[in-house]
Image (cartoon, rainbow, N blue to C red; front, top):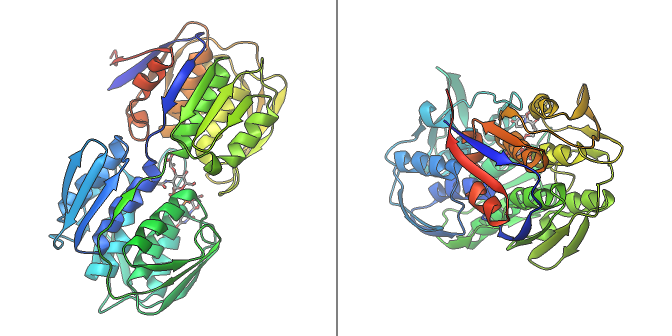
Length: 420
Ligand code: EPZ
């Protein structure tokens, strides 16, 4: 296992290019199972989760050619309808093959994704919706076994919570169902919208995307299409905070500022100087940031995937902030590690009370999940001395070449094999 070694205290400056969004690339890859033929996907991020999803698709019978950030996926038919546990356990988003396999091939066997560091992560809403559309679903030996004779039937589905992958899974299945499916309390994340725009290019009939009511009129089949993955809004936010937390000036390019409204509003409230253009954002620290309260919510609220990174910034803010996590039940594992670096944080239920300190000190810390890893890297960039973040395999799941991109901004970051 590798660790990331950061010498803190250097102001970041320069330009960084944002990669394609991991959380769009994954459902879009899974959706290629909905039709025979070829799909060309551009601006694909070079991250481990995309490689894992590619392995799942290959296992199911897809042919995938990769040239740089271009993935050409060809499907003549499926060799198997089973997504194996050894792959699913490494990436819960593998559950996204469930809807497409069921809708196009009539059967799907997907290992139940276990929980993870940030919460139980059930998929009950995915399964209930597919059952309502006529699927027979049973769970045995740790697998979800779903099947349907003939086509799924359109239905009106209400999601108790606006689940992102639940909306994506059922929207994909509904594309080939008989009749109309209405998803109520659907997720509004840009990743859902990007998937929908790809499905529509392939002949799907989807409306209401970006709202909490999505209507899908089923069609007999879809065809292949080309698509460029949207830039990653979480990677964008991570580099904005890297510029702010180091007192530097960073220009983030090839991004979608319109997908980052909640974060930009909070950074401005904290006194960070931002210059927003069509596909770029310039961030400049303006002295010590002001403490601001943050509450994570489904899109367009403040993204839970930016909670840990914002906490790193607030650990060095003037005053106290209350950070409330409403989406996942245990997404504060980074707090214990930040405390090792001198942060003053008190957890009260799903609130973290963060009182800014004058400085953080570098220390050996351990990553627990993808975004917690990013938080610790950001804290290390600002801390005095050396920070060693271990278990950075978490980071590699969702950040493309993070060490190279940070080095390009003047950070002193290197990757090395973990000392045992
Ligand atoms: C997606 O996860 C993202 N992953 C997550 O990003 C992100 O944090 C999350 O959405 C919220 O925005 C991908 O898109 C691959 P949810 P997902 O279903 O779909 C509960 C990252 O760091 N729920 O929207 O799994 C669930 O427990 C990752 O890139 C049910 O109860 O999240 C949670 O409390 C982390 N039953 C809430 O809904 C269900 O059937 C939101 O979960 C489904 C979800």
